[in-house]
Image (tube, rainbow, N blue to C red; front, side, top):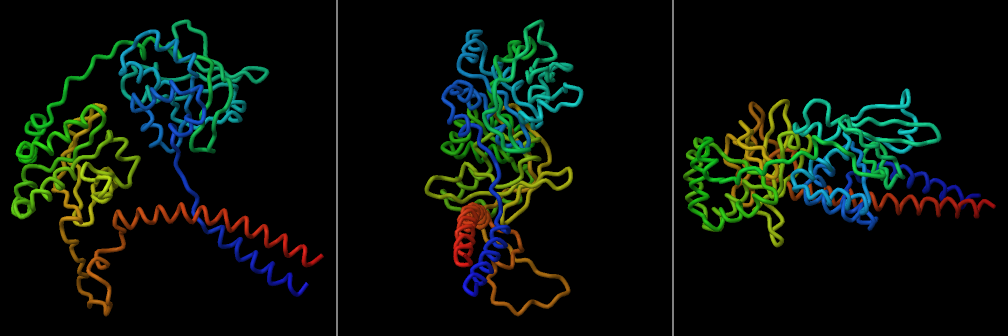
Length: 399
């Protein structure tokens, strides 16, 4: 008994420590579906239409997946990729529906909004999905404009992460004449011409003076690009600093204003956090910044400067361009400004100038924190197992 008491006390301490470890969050639809080869075609077109990114960025969502046979019926219609995006966006619901929740619908039915409805391409109510729980456990899904087509039937649940993401298999593709209507291809984007017309001519001129950098921007236009373009006044004010940079420094600074992914205004507001830029390479994993929502404003914050988005120049998937009021300065090229407290004596501290910049962590620091959180999560699981083993040992000693 005397030996058991210390063991039990240690176990309680382990339990208390494990309870403080953070829980890893997030989901990746591509990785989840990769575990189910019978949905490989559906998975492929989620990526090809950029809907996979849309799914991964949302906190609460339901995906109605169709197997390869069902996708073959859809592909036989020879729809364009843009039209396929509209059809597949019908299968992404803006709410969480587990299989259990579907069988507990109030009055046996409900109407859910789809990503197609919220995209702005669905006229009227055509982007809403009617969900009905029938007798004997049958659940059906049908669009508002099905045009006489039979509803799709729930087959089974593939993956459920409570209140985050639910992936359900349905029998067939949801039918919608509006979603299947031909979509005209958008006109090619001439980035520098667009920037020059929208108050960013000075930045456009810098890109034109750096052909290799401009080519990197243009190469990303077809696959996904977000550009934060400083205004002409901001570029002029920054001119002396820009001239003092090396050739490589100038290239990195320009690339720092591009993100190799499409972020609509809504996605910027709902997906605050670190953004990898065109300046980030496999060898140099820095050159990040943080996007934050501050009331109705959206800010882009480096460790050196904070810029505010002043207008949306282009929002046309897969590209977005935003005007900002300052040139983005990466900490890799510029010194972090010191923060001086007004009317207060300087603290007697040996902290570095970097530490005086404020409580916000740098991208590298916060990345380390993220990695630490994942490591701590794993450690938490190990400690839980260790606690169980310790408790078992304590019981044996008591006996």
